[in-house]
Length: 593
Image 1 (cartoon, rainbow, N blue to C red):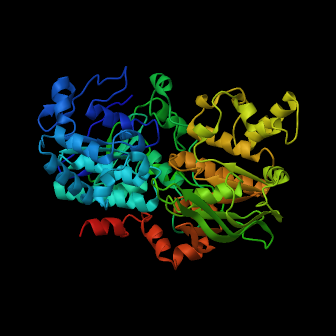
Image 2: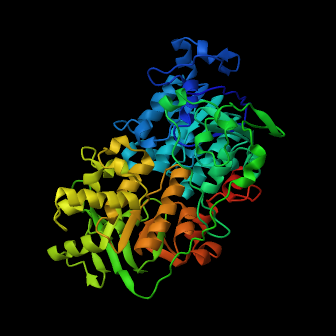
Image 3: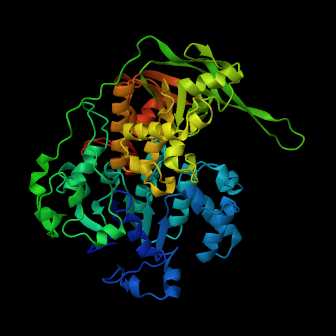
Protein backbone atom coordinates (compact mmCIF):
# COMPACT_ATOMS: atom_id res chain seq x y z
CA UNK A 1 0.00 0.00 0.00
CA UNK A 2 2.83 2.43 0.90
CA UNK A 3 5.60 2.48 -1.67
CA UNK A 4 9.02 4.12 -1.90
CA UNK A 5 8.49 6.39 1.08
CA UNK A 6 11.58 8.04 2.57
CA UNK A 7 11.91 10.91 5.03
CA UNK A 8 14.00 12.17 7.93
CA UNK A 9 12.51 13.81 11.01
CA UNK A 10 15.08 15.74 13.02
CA UNK A 11 14.79 16.26 16.81
CA UNK A 12 12.48 19.14 17.72
CA UNK A 13 10.88 19.35 14.27
CA UNK A 14 7.29 18.81 13.08
CA UNK A 15 6.67 16.83 9.88
CA UNK A 16 3.19 17.01 8.36
CA UNK A 17 1.64 14.20 6.32
CA UNK A 18 -1.27 15.45 4.19
CA UNK A 19 -3.69 13.65 1.88
CA UNK A 20 -7.23 12.36 1.46
CA UNK A 21 -8.69 9.41 3.33
CA UNK A 22 -7.19 6.20 1.96
CA UNK A 23 -3.87 7.84 1.04
CA UNK A 24 -2.02 5.79 3.67
CA UNK A 25 -1.36 8.56 6.22
CA UNK A 26 -2.49 6.57 9.25
CA UNK A 27 -0.60 3.49 8.02
CA UNK A 28 2.65 5.44 8.43
CA UNK A 29 1.81 6.17 12.05
CA UNK A 30 0.68 2.59 12.64
CA UNK A 31 3.93 1.28 11.13
CA UNK A 32 5.95 3.37 13.57
CA UNK A 33 4.02 2.32 16.67
CA UNK A 34 3.67 -1.31 15.53
CA UNK A 35 -0.13 -1.28 15.24
CA UNK A 36 -0.62 -2.41 11.62
CA UNK A 37 -3.91 -4.23 10.88
CA UNK A 38 -3.88 -8.01 10.54
CA UNK A 39 -2.45 -9.06 7.18
CA UNK A 40 -0.30 -5.93 6.76
CA UNK A 41 3.45 -5.73 7.33
CA UNK A 42 6.62 -3.89 6.33
CA UNK A 43 8.07 -5.87 3.42
CA UNK A 44 11.23 -3.87 2.71
CA UNK A 45 13.20 -0.84 3.84
CA UNK A 46 14.15 0.34 7.31
CA UNK A 47 12.50 2.44 10.01
CA UNK A 48 15.05 3.90 12.40
CA UNK A 49 14.38 5.71 15.67
CA UNK A 50 17.72 6.94 16.92
CA UNK A 51 20.02 4.00 16.32
CA UNK A 52 17.39 1.26 16.43
CA UNK A 53 15.61 -0.31 13.45
CA UNK A 54 11.95 -0.50 14.46
CA UNK A 55 11.30 -3.22 11.89
CA UNK A 56 13.64 -5.65 13.63
CA UNK A 57 12.63 -4.94 17.23
CA UNK A 58 11.40 -7.73 19.48
CA UNK A 59 7.86 -7.30 20.82
CA UNK A 60 9.25 -6.74 24.34
CA UNK A 61 11.60 -3.97 23.19
CA UNK A 62 8.83 -2.30 21.15
CA UNK A 63 6.51 -2.31 24.18
CA UNK A 64 9.29 -0.72 26.25
CA UNK A 65 9.63 2.13 23.73
CA UNK A 66 5.90 2.78 23.35
CA UNK A 67 4.61 5.24 25.90
CA UNK A 68 8.13 6.38 26.73
CA UNK A 69 10.14 7.19 23.61
CA UNK A 70 7.22 6.97 21.16
CA UNK A 71 3.67 8.09 21.94
CA UNK A 72 0.49 8.28 19.90
CA UNK A 73 -2.35 10.84 19.83
CA UNK A 74 -5.30 9.20 18.02
CA UNK A 75 -8.05 10.87 16.01
CA UNK A 76 -11.01 9.81 18.18
CA UNK A 77 -10.40 10.90 21.78
CA UNK A 78 -13.74 9.64 23.05
CA UNK A 79 -12.96 6.07 21.99
CA UNK A 80 -9.25 6.17 22.87
CA UNK A 81 -9.88 6.86 26.57
CA UNK A 82 -11.22 4.08 28.80
CA UNK A 83 -14.91 4.90 29.43
CA UNK A 84 -15.06 3.07 32.80
CA UNK A 85 -12.01 4.77 34.33
CA UNK A 86 -11.79 8.35 35.57
CA UNK A 87 -9.31 10.75 34.01
CA UNK A 88 -7.25 10.65 37.22
CA UNK A 89 -7.11 6.84 37.22
CA UNK A 90 -5.93 6.75 33.60
CA UNK A 91 -3.21 9.34 34.24
CA UNK A 92 -2.16 7.49 37.40
CA UNK A 93 -1.96 4.15 35.56
CA UNK A 94 0.21 5.64 32.80
CA UNK A 95 2.58 7.43 35.19
CA UNK A 96 2.97 4.26 37.25
CA UNK A 97 4.00 2.41 34.08
CA UNK A 98 6.59 5.14 33.49
CA UNK A 99 8.20 4.28 36.85
CA UNK A 100 6.77 6.86 39.26
CA UNK A 101 6.01 4.58 42.23
CA UNK A 102 4.86 7.15 44.79
CA UNK A 103 1.12 7.81 44.55
CA UNK A 104 1.50 11.37 45.79
CA UNK A 105 4.21 12.09 43.20
CA UNK A 106 2.04 10.60 40.46
CA UNK A 107 -0.85 12.85 41.47
CA UNK A 108 1.43 15.88 41.58
CA UNK A 109 2.81 15.08 38.11
CA UNK A 110 -0.68 14.42 36.72
CA UNK A 111 -1.93 17.79 37.96
CA UNK A 112 1.15 19.41 36.40
CA UNK A 113 0.38 17.73 33.05
CA UNK A 114 -3.24 18.89 33.12
CA UNK A 115 -2.04 22.42 33.82
CA UNK A 116 0.44 22.22 30.91
CA UNK A 117 -2.38 21.34 28.51
CA UNK A 118 -4.46 24.26 29.87
CA UNK A 119 -7.11 22.18 31.63
CA UNK A 120 -8.22 24.11 34.73
CA UNK A 121 -9.59 22.63 37.97
CA UNK A 122 -7.41 19.53 37.84
CA UNK A 123 -8.75 18.19 41.14
CA UNK A 124 -12.32 18.18 39.82
CA UNK A 125 -11.20 16.77 36.47
CA UNK A 126 -9.53 13.85 38.23
CA UNK A 127 -12.92 12.51 39.31
CA UNK A 128 -14.61 12.82 35.92
CA UNK A 129 -15.14 10.16 33.27
CA UNK A 130 -14.41 10.75 29.56
CA UNK A 131 -18.12 11.05 28.68
CA UNK A 132 -18.36 13.99 31.09
CA UNK A 133 -15.80 15.98 29.06
CA UNK A 134 -16.02 17.70 25.69
CA UNK A 135 -14.14 16.34 22.69
CA UNK A 136 -11.54 19.10 22.97
CA UNK A 137 -10.95 18.35 26.67
CA UNK A 138 -10.56 14.62 25.95
CA UNK A 139 -8.05 15.43 23.21
CA UNK A 140 -6.02 17.53 25.65
CA UNK A 141 -6.01 14.67 28.16
CA UNK A 142 -4.58 12.42 25.42
CA UNK A 143 -1.92 15.03 24.63
CA UNK A 144 -1.03 15.17 28.33
CA UNK A 145 -0.62 11.38 28.32
CA UNK A 146 1.48 11.56 25.14
CA UNK A 147 3.93 14.16 26.49
CA UNK A 148 4.07 12.77 30.04
CA UNK A 149 7.29 10.82 29.43
CA UNK A 150 8.96 13.60 27.41
CA UNK A 151 9.14 11.26 24.39
CA UNK A 152 11.47 11.54 21.45
CA UNK A 153 8.61 11.15 18.94
CA UNK A 154 4.87 11.89 19.07
CA UNK A 155 2.63 10.57 16.29
CA UNK A 156 -0.47 12.80 16.13
CA UNK A 157 -3.09 11.21 13.84
CA UNK A 158 -5.71 13.83 12.84
CA UNK A 159 -5.74 15.35 16.35
CA UNK A 160 -7.90 18.33 15.33
CA UNK A 161 -10.35 16.78 12.85
CA UNK A 162 -13.99 17.87 13.39
CA UNK A 163 -13.09 20.08 16.38
CA UNK A 164 -14.28 23.66 16.77
CA UNK A 165 -11.92 26.26 15.31
CA UNK A 166 -11.15 27.63 18.77
CA UNK A 167 -10.42 24.17 20.17
CA UNK A 168 -8.38 23.34 17.06
CA UNK A 169 -6.31 26.48 17.60
CA UNK A 170 -5.74 25.56 21.26
CA UNK A 171 -4.66 22.01 20.35
CA UNK A 172 -2.25 23.29 17.66
CA UNK A 173 -0.89 25.90 20.05
CA UNK A 174 -0.47 23.25 22.74
CA UNK A 175 1.42 20.82 20.48
CA UNK A 176 3.70 23.65 19.33
CA UNK A 177 4.41 24.71 22.94
CA UNK A 178 5.18 21.20 24.19
CA UNK A 179 7.25 20.36 21.12
CA UNK A 180 9.29 23.54 21.64
CA UNK A 181 9.71 23.11 25.40
CA UNK A 182 10.50 19.38 25.36
CA UNK A 183 12.42 19.19 22.06
CA UNK A 184 10.11 16.42 20.88
CA UNK A 185 9.74 15.44 17.21
CA UNK A 186 6.14 15.33 15.97
CA UNK A 187 4.62 13.47 13.02
CA UNK A 188 1.45 15.50 12.36
CA UNK A 189 -1.08 13.62 10.20
CA UNK A 190 -3.95 15.68 8.77
CA UNK A 191 -6.11 16.26 5.68
CA UNK A 192 -5.98 20.05 6.20
CA UNK A 193 -3.19 21.44 4.03
CA UNK A 194 -3.71 25.00 5.27
CA UNK A 195 -3.40 23.94 8.93
CA UNK A 196 -0.36 21.76 8.23
CA UNK A 197 1.43 24.65 6.55
CA UNK A 198 1.03 26.63 9.77
CA UNK A 199 2.28 24.18 12.37
CA UNK A 200 4.73 22.01 10.41
CA UNK A 201 8.33 22.64 9.39
CA UNK A 202 8.07 20.26 6.43
CA UNK A 203 5.16 18.57 4.64
CA UNK A 204 4.77 15.31 2.75
CA UNK A 205 1.78 15.15 0.40
CA UNK A 206 0.74 11.50 0.17
CA UNK A 207 -1.42 9.99 -2.56
CA UNK A 208 -2.30 6.27 -2.73
CA UNK A 209 0.71 5.37 -0.59
CA UNK A 210 3.22 7.41 -2.62
CA UNK A 211 4.88 10.67 -1.59
CA UNK A 212 4.04 12.91 -4.55
CA UNK A 213 5.51 16.10 -3.07
CA UNK A 214 7.75 16.96 -0.14
CA UNK A 215 9.21 20.28 0.93
CA UNK A 216 9.29 23.13 3.45
CA UNK A 217 5.76 23.93 4.60
CA UNK A 218 5.73 27.60 3.63
CA UNK A 219 7.08 27.10 0.09
CA UNK A 220 4.93 24.04 -0.58
CA UNK A 221 1.75 25.99 0.13
CA UNK A 222 2.94 29.14 -1.69
CA UNK A 223 4.24 27.34 -4.80
CA UNK A 224 2.86 23.79 -5.03
CA UNK A 225 4.59 21.68 -7.67
CA UNK A 226 2.30 18.65 -7.94
CA UNK A 227 -1.20 18.69 -9.53
CA UNK A 228 -2.64 16.84 -6.52
CA UNK A 229 -1.38 19.48 -4.07
CA UNK A 230 -2.75 22.24 -6.27
CA UNK A 231 -6.13 20.48 -6.54
CA UNK A 232 -6.32 20.17 -2.73
CA UNK A 233 -5.66 23.90 -2.48
CA UNK A 234 -8.38 24.78 -4.98
CA UNK A 235 -10.85 22.44 -3.23
CA UNK A 236 -10.75 24.41 0.02
CA UNK A 237 -12.97 27.50 0.42
CA UNK A 238 -11.07 30.68 1.24
CA UNK A 239 -11.55 33.27 3.98
CA UNK A 240 -10.84 36.15 1.59
CA UNK A 241 -11.32 37.11 -2.06
CA UNK A 242 -14.28 36.40 -4.32
CA UNK A 243 -16.52 33.39 -3.75
CA UNK A 244 -16.20 30.99 -6.68
CA UNK A 245 -16.97 27.36 -7.40
CA UNK A 246 -14.52 24.95 -5.80
CA UNK A 247 -12.34 22.50 -7.69
CA UNK A 248 -13.93 19.06 -7.32
CA UNK A 249 -11.61 16.13 -7.92
CA UNK A 250 -13.44 13.38 -9.84
CA UNK A 251 -13.88 9.86 -8.50
CA UNK A 252 -11.94 8.92 -5.34
CA UNK A 253 -8.71 7.42 -4.05
CA UNK A 254 -8.01 4.01 -5.67
CA UNK A 255 -8.45 0.97 -3.44
CA UNK A 256 -5.95 -1.85 -2.95
CA UNK A 257 -7.34 -3.94 -5.82
CA UNK A 258 -7.14 -1.01 -8.24
CA UNK A 259 -3.59 -0.17 -7.12
CA UNK A 260 -2.39 -3.69 -7.91
CA UNK A 261 -3.48 -3.32 -11.55
CA UNK A 262 -2.34 0.29 -11.94
CA UNK A 263 0.65 1.42 -14.01
CA UNK A 264 2.32 4.79 -14.24
CA UNK A 265 1.39 7.67 -11.95
CA UNK A 266 -1.21 6.69 -9.37
CA UNK A 267 -2.87 10.11 -9.61
CA UNK A 268 -3.21 10.00 -13.42
CA UNK A 269 -6.87 8.75 -13.54
CA UNK A 270 -7.98 11.85 -11.56
CA UNK A 271 -5.38 14.36 -12.75
CA UNK A 272 -6.70 17.29 -14.84
CA UNK A 273 -3.44 17.60 -16.83
CA UNK A 274 -2.51 13.91 -17.28
CA UNK A 275 -1.55 12.56 -20.70
CA UNK A 276 -0.73 9.13 -22.12
CA UNK A 277 2.80 9.13 -20.64
CA UNK A 278 1.40 9.64 -17.14
CA UNK A 279 -0.55 6.37 -17.42
CA UNK A 280 2.52 4.32 -18.34
CA UNK A 281 5.54 6.03 -16.71
CA UNK A 282 6.04 6.03 -12.95
CA UNK A 283 7.42 9.55 -12.34
CA UNK A 284 10.69 9.77 -10.39
CA UNK A 285 11.33 12.36 -7.68
CA UNK A 286 12.90 15.51 -9.01
CA UNK A 287 13.92 18.84 -7.52
CA UNK A 288 11.34 21.65 -7.60
CA UNK A 289 13.21 24.06 -5.33
CA UNK A 290 15.45 24.09 -2.29
CA UNK A 291 14.69 20.91 -0.31
CA UNK A 292 11.52 20.61 -2.42
CA UNK A 293 10.89 17.31 -4.27
CA UNK A 294 8.02 16.39 -6.58
CA UNK A 295 7.04 13.20 -8.44
CA UNK A 296 5.36 14.49 -11.60
CA UNK A 297 6.15 14.60 -15.33
CA UNK A 298 4.29 17.89 -15.83
CA UNK A 299 4.91 19.92 -12.68
CA UNK A 300 5.59 23.01 -14.82
CA UNK A 301 2.08 22.95 -16.29
CA UNK A 302 0.00 23.61 -13.17
CA UNK A 303 -1.40 26.77 -14.76
CA UNK A 304 -3.67 24.42 -16.72
CA UNK A 305 -5.53 23.54 -13.51
CA UNK A 306 -8.33 26.08 -13.23
CA UNK A 307 -11.64 26.31 -11.41
CA UNK A 308 -14.77 27.03 -13.50
CA UNK A 309 -15.41 30.76 -13.25
CA UNK A 310 -18.83 30.44 -11.64
CA UNK A 311 -19.46 33.03 -8.94
CA UNK A 312 -21.29 31.84 -5.82
CA UNK A 313 -24.12 34.32 -5.44
CA UNK A 314 -25.80 33.75 -2.09
CA UNK A 315 -29.43 35.00 -2.21
CA UNK A 316 -30.34 37.54 0.45
CA UNK A 317 -33.53 37.76 2.46
CA UNK A 318 -36.43 38.74 0.19
CA UNK A 319 -38.48 40.00 3.12
CA UNK A 320 -40.78 36.95 3.13
CA UNK A 321 -39.90 35.04 6.31
CA UNK A 322 -40.03 31.32 5.62
CA UNK A 323 -38.80 30.37 9.10
CA UNK A 324 -39.07 32.66 12.11
CA UNK A 325 -38.06 32.11 15.72
CA UNK A 326 -39.53 34.63 18.15
CA UNK A 327 -37.82 34.66 21.59
CA UNK A 328 -37.47 30.86 21.45
CA UNK A 329 -35.80 29.05 24.33
CA UNK A 330 -35.13 25.53 25.57
CA UNK A 331 -34.69 24.66 29.23
CA UNK A 332 -33.41 21.28 30.47
CA UNK A 333 -33.85 20.16 34.03
CA UNK A 334 -30.75 18.68 35.68
CA UNK A 335 -30.99 16.09 38.40
CA UNK A 336 -29.41 17.17 41.69
CA UNK A 337 -27.66 15.09 44.31
CA UNK A 338 -29.71 13.19 46.91
CA UNK A 339 -31.71 15.55 49.17
CA UNK A 340 -30.92 18.47 46.86
CA UNK A 341 -33.22 20.28 44.48
CA UNK A 342 -32.84 19.65 40.78
CA UNK A 343 -31.55 22.56 38.75
CA UNK A 344 -32.14 23.78 35.24
CA UNK A 345 -29.95 24.69 32.29
CA UNK A 346 -30.89 26.91 29.37
CA UNK A 347 -29.45 25.38 26.20
CA UNK A 348 -31.15 28.03 24.03
CA UNK A 349 -32.26 31.37 25.46
CA UNK A 350 -34.38 34.15 23.91
CA UNK A 351 -33.40 33.48 20.28
CA UNK A 352 -35.01 35.58 17.57
CA UNK A 353 -34.13 35.39 13.86
CA UNK A 354 -35.65 34.54 10.50
CA UNK A 355 -34.70 32.81 7.27
CA UNK A 356 -36.13 34.11 4.01
CA UNK A 357 -37.22 32.07 0.99
CA UNK A 358 -34.19 30.74 -0.91
CA UNK A 359 -31.77 32.18 1.67
CA UNK A 360 -28.79 30.26 3.11
CA UNK A 361 -28.09 31.34 6.70
CA UNK A 362 -25.03 30.10 8.58
CA UNK A 363 -25.12 29.26 12.29
CA UNK A 364 -21.69 29.15 13.95
CA UNK A 365 -20.35 28.78 17.48
CA UNK A 366 -18.38 26.47 19.70
CA UNK A 367 -19.60 23.02 20.76
CA UNK A 368 -22.11 23.42 23.55
CA UNK A 369 -23.26 26.84 22.39
CA UNK A 370 -26.74 25.51 21.52
CA UNK A 371 -26.54 25.15 17.72
CA UNK A 372 -27.77 21.53 17.51
CA UNK A 373 -30.45 22.12 20.15
CA UNK A 374 -31.72 25.03 18.08
CA UNK A 375 -31.85 22.78 15.00
CA UNK A 376 -33.80 20.17 16.97
CA UNK A 377 -36.29 22.84 18.05
CA UNK A 378 -36.88 23.84 14.44
CA UNK A 379 -37.42 20.21 13.42
CA UNK A 380 -39.71 19.39 16.35
CA UNK A 381 -37.26 16.91 17.88
CA UNK A 382 -37.35 19.09 21.01
CA UNK A 383 -40.24 21.21 22.27
CA UNK A 384 -39.60 24.89 22.94
CA UNK A 385 -39.83 25.99 26.59
CA UNK A 386 -40.50 29.62 25.64
CA UNK A 387 -41.26 31.69 22.56
CA UNK A 388 -42.66 30.74 19.17
CA UNK A 389 -41.40 28.92 16.07
CA UNK A 390 -43.20 29.83 12.86
CA UNK A 391 -42.73 27.87 9.65
CA UNK A 392 -44.54 29.22 6.61
CA UNK A 393 -46.49 31.50 8.94
CA UNK A 394 -47.77 28.61 11.08
CA UNK A 395 -46.96 28.48 14.81
CA UNK A 396 -45.50 25.04 15.54
CA UNK A 397 -45.07 25.42 19.29
CA UNK A 398 -48.62 24.19 19.95
CA UNK A 399 -47.35 20.65 19.22
CA UNK A 400 -50.60 19.65 17.50
CA UNK A 401 -50.57 16.48 15.42
CA UNK A 402 -51.34 18.48 12.27
CA UNK A 403 -48.19 20.53 12.86
CA UNK A 404 -46.01 17.45 12.33
CA UNK A 405 -47.39 16.93 8.84
CA UNK A 406 -46.93 20.62 8.06
CA UNK A 407 -43.30 20.49 9.26
CA UNK A 408 -42.65 17.30 7.28
CA UNK A 409 -43.77 19.05 4.09
CA UNK A 410 -41.96 22.34 4.72
CA UNK A 411 -38.68 21.36 6.43
CA UNK A 412 -36.22 18.46 6.38
CA UNK A 413 -32.98 17.84 8.24
CA UNK A 414 -29.61 16.64 6.94
CA UNK A 415 -27.70 15.04 9.79
CA UNK A 416 -23.98 15.31 10.52
CA UNK A 417 -23.06 11.61 10.46
CA UNK A 418 -24.62 9.84 7.47
CA UNK A 419 -23.25 6.49 8.62
CA UNK A 420 -25.46 6.52 11.72
CA UNK A 421 -28.31 8.46 10.05
CA UNK A 422 -28.83 5.86 7.28
CA UNK A 423 -30.38 2.49 8.12
CA UNK A 424 -27.69 -0.12 7.30
CA UNK A 425 -30.34 -2.79 6.61
CA UNK A 426 -32.17 -0.84 3.91
CA UNK A 427 -31.16 -0.24 0.33
CA UNK A 428 -30.50 3.26 -0.97
CA UNK A 429 -33.66 3.35 -3.10
CA UNK A 430 -35.83 2.67 -0.05
CA UNK A 431 -33.89 5.09 2.17
CA UNK A 432 -34.30 8.15 -0.05
CA UNK A 433 -38.06 7.55 -0.44
CA UNK A 434 -38.85 6.35 3.08
CA UNK A 435 -41.01 9.43 3.74
CA UNK A 436 -43.30 8.22 0.94
CA UNK A 437 -43.64 4.86 2.65
CA UNK A 438 -44.46 6.68 5.90
CA UNK A 439 -47.65 8.01 4.32
CA UNK A 440 -46.71 11.52 3.24
CA UNK A 441 -47.68 10.74 -0.35
CA UNK A 442 -48.36 6.99 -0.81
CA UNK A 443 -46.85 5.43 -3.94
CA UNK A 444 -46.35 1.89 -5.19
CA UNK A 445 -42.84 0.44 -5.37
CA UNK A 446 -42.29 1.20 -9.06
CA UNK A 447 -43.19 4.88 -8.72
CA UNK A 448 -41.05 5.20 -5.59
CA UNK A 449 -38.01 3.75 -7.38
CA UNK A 450 -38.54 6.16 -10.27
CA UNK A 451 -38.64 9.01 -7.75
CA UNK A 452 -35.48 7.59 -6.14
CA UNK A 453 -33.67 7.61 -9.52
CA UNK A 454 -34.55 11.26 -10.04
CA UNK A 455 -33.39 12.17 -6.52
CA UNK A 456 -30.08 10.36 -6.95
CA UNK A 457 -29.55 12.08 -10.29
CA UNK A 458 -30.15 15.45 -8.57
CA UNK A 459 -27.28 14.77 -6.15
CA UNK A 460 -24.94 13.36 -8.80
CA UNK A 461 -25.36 9.62 -8.18
CA UNK A 462 -26.21 6.97 -10.77
CA UNK A 463 -29.14 4.56 -10.80
CA UNK A 464 -26.72 1.72 -9.99
CA UNK A 465 -26.73 2.99 -6.39
CA UNK A 466 -30.40 2.11 -5.86
CA UNK A 467 -29.77 -1.48 -4.74
CA UNK A 468 -26.70 -0.79 -2.65
CA UNK A 469 -26.55 -0.65 1.13
CA UNK A 470 -25.00 2.34 2.98
CA UNK A 471 -21.96 0.25 3.94
CA UNK A 472 -21.15 -0.13 0.23
CA UNK A 473 -20.82 3.63 -0.26
CA UNK A 474 -18.03 6.10 0.43
CA UNK A 475 -18.48 8.86 3.03
CA UNK A 476 -19.22 11.44 0.34
CA UNK A 477 -21.73 9.15 -1.37
CA UNK A 478 -23.52 8.48 1.92
CA UNK A 479 -23.84 12.21 2.56
CA UNK A 480 -25.28 12.68 -0.95
CA UNK A 481 -27.87 9.98 -0.16
CA UNK A 482 -28.59 11.82 3.09
CA UNK A 483 -29.26 15.03 1.11
CA UNK A 484 -31.37 13.17 -1.49
CA UNK A 485 -33.57 11.76 1.28
CA UNK A 486 -34.13 15.25 2.67
CA UNK A 487 -35.12 16.56 -0.80
CA UNK A 488 -37.73 13.84 -1.37
CA UNK A 489 -40.66 15.98 -0.17
CA UNK A 490 -39.38 19.07 -2.02
CA UNK A 491 -39.07 21.01 1.26
CA UNK A 492 -38.93 24.78 1.44
CA UNK A 493 -36.03 24.73 3.93
CA UNK A 494 -33.24 22.33 4.88
CA UNK A 495 -31.62 22.26 8.31
CA UNK A 496 -28.05 21.00 7.80
CA UNK A 497 -26.13 20.11 10.96
CA UNK A 498 -22.34 19.94 10.33
CA UNK A 499 -22.83 17.99 7.09
CA UNK A 500 -19.27 18.52 5.79
CA UNK A 501 -17.51 18.21 9.16
CA UNK A 502 -14.47 15.92 9.08
CA UNK A 503 -14.74 15.17 5.34
CA UNK A 504 -11.79 15.38 2.94
CA UNK A 505 -11.59 18.73 1.19
CA UNK A 506 -12.22 17.03 -2.16
CA UNK A 507 -15.50 15.48 -0.95
CA UNK A 508 -16.39 18.69 0.86
CA UNK A 509 -15.92 20.63 -2.40
CA UNK A 510 -18.23 18.23 -4.25
CA UNK A 511 -20.96 18.66 -1.62
CA UNK A 512 -20.66 22.46 -1.46
CA UNK A 513 -20.83 22.74 -5.25
CA UNK A 514 -23.82 20.39 -5.16
CA UNK A 515 -25.67 22.53 -2.60
CA UNK A 516 -24.98 25.70 -4.62
CA UNK A 517 -26.34 24.04 -7.77
CA UNK A 518 -29.43 22.63 -6.04
CA UNK A 519 -30.19 26.03 -4.52
CA UNK A 520 -30.16 27.58 -8.00
CA UNK A 521 -32.33 24.80 -9.46
CA UNK A 522 -34.80 24.10 -6.62
CA UNK A 523 -34.81 27.40 -4.72
CA UNK A 524 -34.91 25.98 -1.18
CA UNK A 525 -33.59 27.85 1.87
CA UNK A 526 -31.16 26.40 4.40
CA UNK A 527 -30.10 26.86 8.00
CA UNK A 528 -26.48 25.73 7.71
CA UNK A 529 -24.81 24.77 11.01
CA UNK A 530 -21.02 24.54 10.88
CA UNK A 531 -17.86 25.20 12.88
CA UNK A 532 -15.92 25.80 9.64
CA UNK A 533 -16.11 29.55 9.02
CA UNK A 534 -14.59 29.33 5.53
CA UNK A 535 -17.42 26.99 4.47
CA UNK A 536 -20.03 29.36 5.93
CA UNK A 537 -18.45 32.30 4.10
CA UNK A 538 -18.44 30.35 0.83
CA UNK A 539 -22.06 29.23 0.94
CA UNK A 540 -24.12 31.63 3.08
CA UNK A 541 -25.31 35.22 2.74
CA UNK A 542 -25.96 35.82 6.45
CA UNK A 543 -24.43 34.40 9.61
CA UNK A 544 -25.66 33.97 13.20
CA UNK A 545 -23.06 33.61 15.95
CA UNK A 546 -24.16 31.63 19.03
CA UNK A 547 -22.52 31.72 22.44
CA UNK A 548 -23.95 30.37 25.69
CA UNK A 549 -27.28 29.56 24.04
CA UNK A 550 -27.80 33.10 22.71
CA UNK A 551 -27.35 34.82 19.34
CA UNK A 552 -24.60 37.31 20.16
CA UNK A 553 -24.05 38.68 16.64
CA UNK A 554 -25.72 38.43 13.26
CA UNK A 555 -25.49 40.09 9.87
CA UNK A 556 -24.21 39.73 6.33
CA UNK A 557 -21.31 37.24 6.22
CA UNK A 558 -18.82 39.62 4.59
CA UNK A 559 -19.62 42.41 7.05
CA UNK A 560 -19.49 40.25 10.19
CA UNK A 561 -16.27 38.50 9.14
CA UNK A 562 -14.58 41.76 8.11
CA UNK A 563 -15.63 43.80 11.16
CA UNK A 564 -16.76 41.53 14.04
CA UNK A 565 -18.32 43.41 16.95
CA UNK A 566 -18.60 40.72 19.62
CA UNK A 567 -15.55 39.32 21.44
CA UNK A 568 -16.62 35.72 20.74
CA UNK A 569 -16.90 36.38 17.00
CA UNK A 570 -13.43 37.89 17.05
CA UNK A 571 -12.12 34.82 18.91
CA UNK A 572 -13.65 32.47 16.33
CA UNK A 573 -12.20 34.39 13.38
CA UNK A 574 -8.72 34.70 14.92
CA UNK A 575 -8.64 30.89 15.35
CA UNK A 576 -8.91 30.23 11.59
CA UNK A 577 -5.54 29.79 9.81
CA UNK A 578 -5.16 32.62 7.23
CA UNK A 579 -5.10 31.85 3.52
CA UNK A 580 -1.74 33.59 3.00
CA UNK A 581 1.31 31.58 4.19
CA UNK A 582 3.13 34.73 5.33
CA UNK A 583 0.22 36.14 7.36
CA UNK A 584 0.46 36.04 11.15
CA UNK A 585 -1.72 33.55 13.05
CA UNK A 586 -2.38 34.50 16.70
CA UNK A 587 -2.35 30.95 18.24
CA UNK A 588 1.19 30.23 17.00
CA UNK A 589 2.36 33.75 17.86
CA UNK A 590 1.16 33.16 21.43
CA UNK A 591 2.90 29.77 21.65
CA UNK A 592 6.19 31.37 20.59
CA UNK A 593 6.16 33.85 23.48
